[in-house]
Image 1 (cartoon, rainbow, N blue to C red):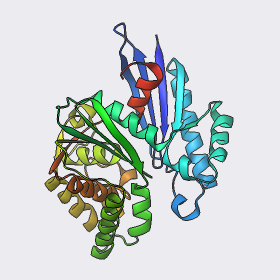
Image 2: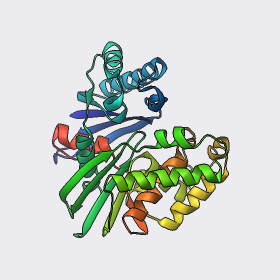
Image 3: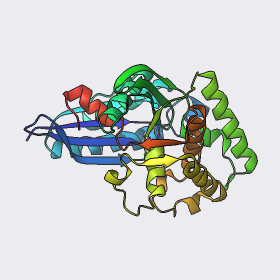
Image 4: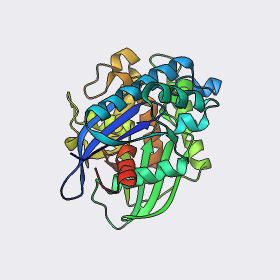
Length: 306
């Protein structure tokens, strides 16, 4: 048994992937888990990761490390992204993980994060030869990768995520029309200021926002990655979901079929970001990828695809 594990510590969630190397040299998924532990909660206002968030997320990482070891992993890679890049106290969290799990956390640069998103997407979607854009909407940042077919041209990350938009703009429950309009305006300005523009021939979306919206689109009571992977989401569907979430309280959103209850408070911000990106790229649809940074990390760290 030749098994490897990766843990991706994001602003909103901690993701875990355990995979096994087959005789053909391909890593196949054994276990894929997600804990929405909110490392970046309150980070926008304070600039620091709170002790509560440190404790909660370090415990989540420790539990995944234990699962990896129990599952037979002989190598475990643990990385952090936007929250740890921007916080003034990342070493407090890194130390907490080391103390609890006996393992080191490496902080990825935005450029590295975008590249891993690209690797994940091209390993799981049939791509054409036209202009390609891959997006990964996270809790604290959004990654963009541009290329043609499977050839990467440009990649970058911007400080735009679902946690920050939610905390800054969505104060009411349900949100007001004014709050929604101001959020959309701010998102559009930030995308323009960072040079996000089209047109593109193919747009691929990944990350918790996109896959959650895919699950809602398919009305999935139980999440099925095989159904979500490669499905198409139209601008009309994105607008439909924005209308649904903006008309509901957070508690009512928790009852939406396909939506994980822990994403109820941030899903509207994610849908707004996704709509703005689709409009900037001059398209009316995107392809949904269930693959994420952890799949790209598996490829880089262990030289195969999961």
